[in-house]
Length: 286
Image (cartoon, rainbow, N blue to C red; front, side, top):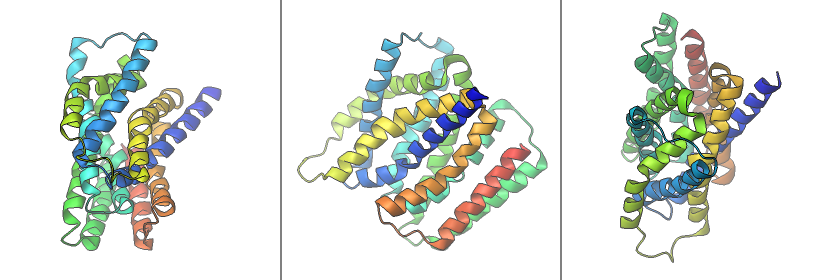
């Protein structure tokens, strides 16, 4: 019972940390380019992850694990941060969080694809309903300036879900926080070179909010959140604690309104709630 309670508590902390990622990215892109932000956050987190691996004397992954680790790196270290940073140049973080409501479902679909499972027909009904809700909302809200942002968010969710599915499989052998640490280390050479190549021409115009956003996504979103999240999954069970991720859109919308003073329309809240219900139904029917 104590292990289960500790898992739910740890998982909730992880979800709260992840909920601040998009608002923090929104702050960071106010002073940094998406390419520099993506590469810098990965390089900083890689240094921290490498230090953890060395201090705790973790074994190196097997050669056969390098391919899946590369998928994790492309999905959650490079793809999702870069595409969301690009998207947030066109849309608000509150709007982007609606798409995050699809992440648990997209992860489940990638898990079905990678694991060869056969979900019940009800799973696909909930999946279609949730997808249509998000697509309809995006089309209704979007104008010429935000269509690109919506498409970038869809691509970001797809890559992230694939990275989550591969990471969940690897964590059974390597451990949860070890997976994200090794993925960061694997991507670090390319990310360090890209960070140096995209350094800002001048640091004078970069304000404190942008620096705070960079620090948050580098330390918390890229590493610390995964430590709590994977610990929660290990102690409390993937199926149970994984449901906590459905709360992420609500936490994110609250943070976007409180910290960034972005308007959160009632329709946005309603659609997010509908998506969460659809994802919950799909997960139960899988």
